[in-house]
Structures are given as structure tokens and as C-alpha cells.
Image (tube, rainbow, N blue to C red; front, top):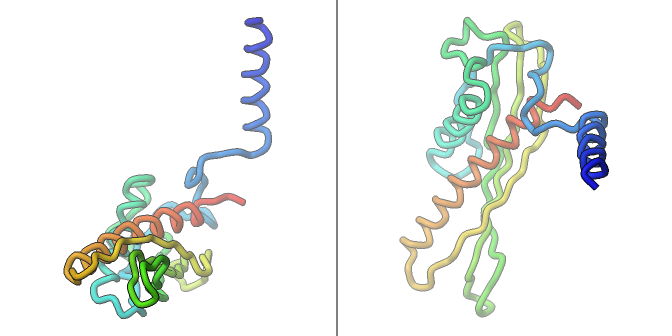
Length: 171
């Protein structure tokens, strides 16, 4: 019985490693890049200050996963990560009546590019889209606005994580 369990465990490990399974974000940067400078993202949304929040979350994601790859000066980087918050939109996702929302969802779209120091595009993300729901507090706009701000903060973290994983995906 023990031999059968050990055999299955070894077989599982071999199958997972043989098929190319790896943890998200564990690959390398494209084109042999090792040092990255991140610029402030362009904010094309109507949400004031979103560029700071989203850029900081992107920097945090790099720091959390590959601190040694992040540089503070553009001149010492192999590549520059630039991008834009393409949109932040809000939609009702549940209602108690035709005119009363109970829950809303904020959808964020981010687009990034990794460029070499001579301006060549090494990687482009396309649109990275994430969503986050939040509660509407009946009769309390301040609480609803706070819930929206909290949802945008969570959304920003999700987008940063997705962006880093796409950037380091070796497929």
C-alpha cells in the first residue's frame, strides 16, 4: 500500500513538471531584461489620482516578486515599463427595484508596454481587464463612494498582479 502511494506521488510530480507547469510570475522577463524602470501610468479614466494608485501597486508587485529587478533611475534600466489606465467603468449588477442599485461593479482596463532603452517594444500586454464588485449603501452616498474607492484599490492590486504574471509568463 505504501509503495502504491509513493509511486502515485512520484508520478504526479513528474507529470506536473514534464507538462511545463509552473507558478504564475515565476518566469523571466522578455528579451533577457533584468532591470526595469516603471514610469507613472497615464490616466485616461475619469477617476482622479488613479495613476498614482495603479503605478504604486505595479511597483509593489515587482518589489514583492523580484525586488532586485526594479531600478529607481531610468538610465540604469535595461527596459522601461510604460502604460495607461485605459478605463474605469461602473455598472449596476444587482437591484432591489428598477431604479435602486444594491451592488455595482467597477471594471478596469490597463495596457502596458515594455520598451528597450533604445525604444524598441519588447513586450505589450494588450488590454488587461479585471473587475471588482462593491455594495451600494441605500441613502448614504458617502459610504457608497468609500465602497467604490475600496473596490478600485482591490481592482488596482488585481491588475498589477495580472500584469506582472503576463510579463513573466514564458509561453
